[in-house]
Amino acid sequence: MRSLIARFPGLERLARLPIASLPTPVVLAPELSRELDAQVAIKRDDLTAADASGVRYGGNKVRKLELILGAALARGSRTIVTTGAIGSHHVLATGLYAREHGIAVEAAVVDQPMTDHVRENLRAIVALGVRLVLVPSYPRVPTTMLSLAARAALRDRRRPLVVGPGGSTALGTIG
Image (cartoon, rainbow, N blue to C red):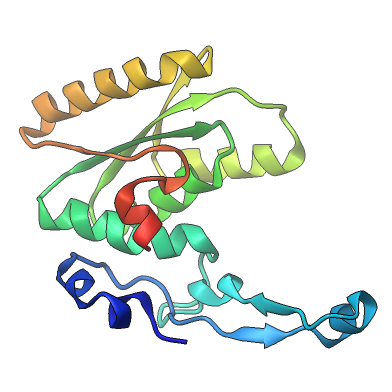
């Protein structure tokens, strides 16, 4: 199987911050294959975090952040404005990797049921220094993000990078 860059060489021009161990393998799942009477393979994106600095955070978020953070650094952004639920894995991963590269993260977050897992993510997000702004409902997220972006632009004297929930941007999708 050819990589996306092999198929579309122009993608090599995109700024990329190499934070993931890529490509990740596709492995056969023999027990599940037998049970379903079909060949089943699993893409091991959990291994994206096995980079030179040790295991930190895996999955598709890291794959997306390679391009998102690369773009932020290339244009000199000092802040990323994003959104998610209060225990968002995207906000957590963005906070983790952005902090390592001197980029602040501000997030418009919406409440969600407070499970142990959400509480654990929220503690980690706060410990990373991510600035959270609690938004009462999803329809108010876009205006809150615009407000955060405008304040960051005035403060930093640079345009922040605005990223949709889950890293759902054109760059994130390519990642």
